[in-house]
Image (tube, rainbow, N blue to C red):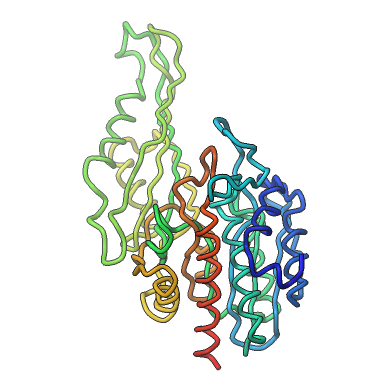
Length: 384
């Protein structure tokens, strides 16, 4: 694919979709992207990491060596296909103006738009600085051998990112509706309450853990965690499972289990929530429970201003819409990038992501490419 052809995002998006790169497999998706970027003059570096999870291939590509370094970040891995498709999930077909395939919305379409935006920008000359792409194959997985380790490698050799736009599908229903300027944190917990098994006819001779578990869960769900903040909605606690695994009707169990997930705003940290949970549970069942906590990300915010204004202005210039600055939704790799530089997220419409018949409008591919082009032109125009 020639550099001139790369100004159209559709063929590259189709080529990427045709690589069934379900995490942790790459299946040649990064080869397709690397070939395109090399034709634009990028120096490409594969970063393969393993340990603590599946071995993952990642790609860092940079055009130029000077500062500032404007980075586009994203992932070529996709979630499994699942059931219910009416089209071939890895064919990249265009039907009635929509591009179908796993990754069309999340987020191979945006990666193709990255490249198209850069190709258009380069028609007017090279940037007075650098453009880079930080692309992982581990965003939909454990996220241990992807972006976080790529950033560590860059920092270890003194290479910096100055700003970053992540191409996650941020728009709920229409391109231009929403930019993410932060994300809530996520805490996942597994609670096991211990007791003593016994005959249900003689409850005084046993210690049934189920009532104790019910009390503990009621204590943490009885009232909201908070009422939200200026840029964040209220924190939420969702029970995800309650398990006893007891097939007998005349036996009380020895243990009862529950799982829950907390999505928290900037009033909390993972550590402060862990302390609250243990203090609450200790008051009810001290020495009678085990609690395992995993924090996949802390809440963060890139305050409205420079970067979000830059992206919002480009979005409005192309779509006519003034995007909402939001922190809603799940986690993304922006939670790692925010430690390196200011970051925000803007990409495709997300209504079909992770679903059967995932798709994006071909017109949105074109407009997203134009938005990324304008972001680069305005960023380097201001930096020049």
